[in-house]
Length: 458
Image (cartoon, rainbow, N blue to C red; front, side):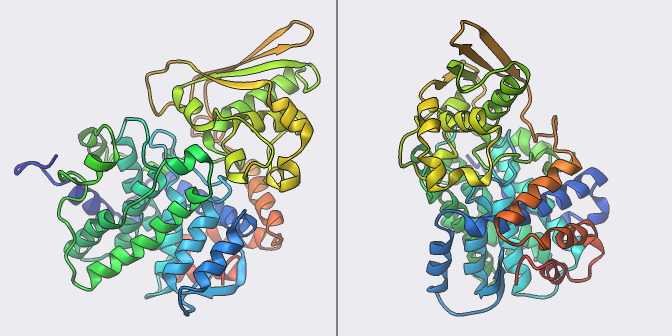
């Protein structure tokens, strides 16, 4: 809680965002900013075919006319900026394929990129360096809020921390006056929302909450620009972000890390379009299948022993008629698909795939067991134990998440993921052009125009 002599954490975060310059960002963070920009654009393009994406677009089209900003994967659609931010954020997160910061337990790019695309479209031209710098700034702020909350999630952090990351990103993009940026940061508290109940039930409210955060950040910015003052202590006030939305607060050590590197370098790819908590089980099943001969036919039982977060997020039963969002968060379904098909892909969440009787029967033999790890944000270590019908016990340990900084995707694997996204969206021709554009984006005088030339957005 704020005390009269304590430094205001909102000031520290906004000052960090406003002071950031491309020339001062280390090369590793520069490259990661471009990598995850490319990854997020590709995922957002694929999101045009996500469950409920067409309905979300139709709803947004009814909110008012305007052609400020484009929508990913829909080169014939333009919307008012706030509406475009909403749809783009929904599409980026709508298939659980967007990048994730594991220790913070949040997806920073779905909100930040959607907000930046919309803001860049409705104002003065922004060059590539400033656009990329704003990405780094926004991720720094959102992730700092995430790692400053070591307790278990009760609100959906990609949305709740995400809106503050978006405001900081736009402030950096536009080099806003400090007082105005702080007002916008304060307004974000009035607009913050996002419940974990949607995750518990596996409902499409999850990407809707991310979408609302991206749209809300534009409103927070506009309110500040209008001269309306925001609350002064949105993070540490008695009814601020941490008092209301997190069980525990460790802001001081998180803020002490500002300026000691950039959080974009700690972000993980998602190699599979599922909840991140399901990835360890998928990889363990692949390794047991490919290296130890485990098959769907000879499986008696498969238990994934993992930290409590994994059990909480994906330890749910598979059932006939599951929503795609539920299945993406269901370890039973994900491991069963892996054992039968070798991997989990975007095509495994159609109605036909979700109601495959062979998959559902196999899923009944799969379970998640919480191992008592005291770290409420831990994804590893974990251990898959499979027992076969002929009496063998097969064990596969998981010490790192595939796609994490400790086990990153190769350039070829990153490119293959992006190509799969473009093929799923029926826009394969944009793949090569977008890759070339993003690799040289810092040299572009107009970042958004360059991205538009690739054909992924109008």
